[in-house]
Image (cartoon, rainbow, N blue to C red):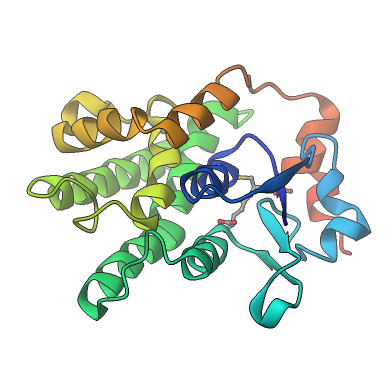
Length: 228
Ligand SMILES: N[C@@H](CCC(=O)N[C@@H](CS)C(=O)NCC(=O)O)C(=O)O
């Protein structure tokens, strides 16, 4: 059985989608990151970086339990466990992984900053908004070129699509007009029809973002930066 520690954010959504796509049984544990659940010792023991998602698989390698954090590592682990969505053919394997790493190292972090400075920052800092919005648009144009002559990011549907998709749902707050990226738009619409993805979009549609003093401190203030 897999225990999934999650919240309604793009990095959490990746793992919900993967577990559903692979039809793996799992138990969801909600980590209320607005309330500071991510700093509880029992969660830090699984996810020392105080971030969701994390999993504990009671039937890991050689039948022993394993715990994992970092959504990219979890996607690769689940793909290897099931033999799904990460082709073994070397060319396709690496074509998939390079786009997973592109998402983990660039697309996610920069889009997150664009979202932060456009939608959350208490003051409008033009330099930061321009910097991250321009970078978000550049990254969407890279993805658009990749999708211009293929249906999925690495030719066949894979953990690369699963990693990237949830981040594109928030394009408006990233300062990106999806109409400018026609291949991304076509890919986005097609993926939205997949049952596993549609189920996750439904699960997270009612989540509204708003901050209290406590949630701001947990995510961006004193609680986040307290030394542990
Ligand atoms: N690189 C990490 C990023 C995870 C991440 O940023 N998680 C956010 C939600 S999307 C979180 O848990 N934030 C809580 C906090 O920063 O305290 C991954 O891909 O798993």
